Image (spheres, rainbow, N blue to C red):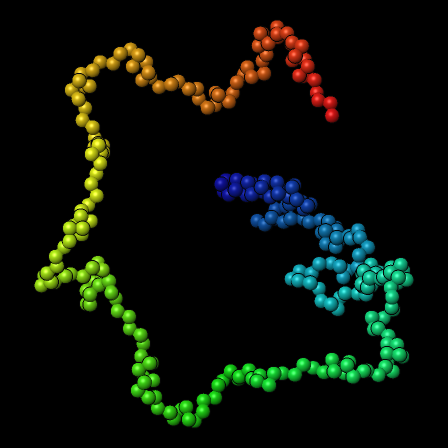
Length: 276
């Protein structure tokens, strides 16, 4: 029983805290049930629609799910009617234009004019050439004689595709050199000039062949001792880091020698601006 009483007490305290932070009036416990007392005046106030502070009609209210139907739209406003009017011409343009209508008026003299023989001749359309043939229709009709004709032997020979033979290789073999093998039965006597021309070009007497990429090290070089000067030259050059090179704290500091320097007459003359 004590545990049950403690549980109800904790529930009552939690509901009391919720009621204090809400719009309810009070909380009571009757016959094992918690009863909440509400402020109905507050509920009626919250149920009233939100006041509109603009003079717009209800037709301007957005509709959920798309645009409102056209039946809810009223008569357009004066602003829309004024924007819908066509653009008007300026009075200066109306006064300067040649005619009030785009149709050109024809004078009575032009209506009663009798064309000469030359004008009638020039007014005739240009005739087509006597040998002119109009364009043929897309589906060409084949005559009965062409459908029943039989090709001659010469026509069938000309209809055969042109066969080109490969001259760089022999038949039924893979492509190879253009020079074919010569049979040994042919006995050819070579002239001295041909033998001379067939000899390869000789190198120069002083020509030196390229050395091997791997040079052998001599025994004297292996036992050599480096001098202090050679060791000094073998040391890498010490360069400052890139970040320290860009940062110079004494960049805008004037040296003492520059402060004591005296400007000569020539420097003062060159320092004068050019007069243009």
